[in-house]
Length: 425
Image (tube, rainbow, N blue to C red):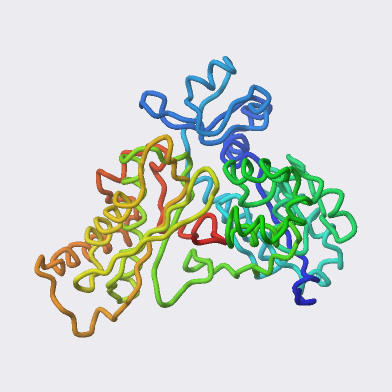
């Protein structure tokens, strides 16, 4: 491994029980009580989006029905989601992180990696000192707690933040990682889902340390290249860098040759209705950014993340003519999804992304579509003007409102892909 990479100092900061903790911070009378944030209870698919620390001992699980959660905890307090609050808290927390480094990469609203390798000497010279200061500031300024992992790469740092919760700091070092990291169950490694765990267990691999010593032949036969990636994670050899976050664009590692947006859904997607709501929301934000950039696209692509093993696959289609029309992009993305992905309980989807490529300037020569989608673009530009004045949720399509877990979510202004995937199969 490059010695520069091996000497990195990476933090992973995870805000504990985020949605519920924000609600308790906003309403101090709820502190110390079992709280869940969930969908509207009078709707058929009211589910638990997140639970407070006090609700966890009752065995309440994320994505289970609210009526089931109430059976487990009769005194449960159920609150609707307030995404504007969660985004505000996330933004304030990120501003605190910027005081320590400009290398801040979100992994969702509530999680961030920080690379403090070049700045730690400006803040006392100790990673533990920086972590404690960040923890205390978040607690004092936002009223919520964080768990922080310290490692030499993003994988060990993420493991550290998950190791002890809530309100804890864990440092994974070259001296203790064999005991702490290698001794942990293999499921605790990022990207080891239930299906991957079962395959590893079938081969007698129970811990991260055993995965670190798995043979080339076994990994190739069982997983292909994915197996070698997981083994490198287990060995602490991840070379992925912490990408700088551009707050003005709400983006990480922005690609100038494409526009894309993705989201890890607040619950597993198991039906066409919820899948379509998310696809159209994502396509809406992508098309709007495409028009803002003065571009049109000739290729539409989707990425689908499996709910069980967290792996991705991608599909794309080439359009007959370049476009920036929302419905053309949305309909194309939806067609890609239904052609390639069963949408039922047995094939649950955890995350979706929509991307457009093959860009050309909108002021250049252009082949007109038989369906004259330039008229749709004119309408979209008019809608863009209203959204600039009154916010992105002032006008929404009916299909985008069918999944209650996404209500009130402004995907365009929370435009980081959550999470940023390591792997595309």
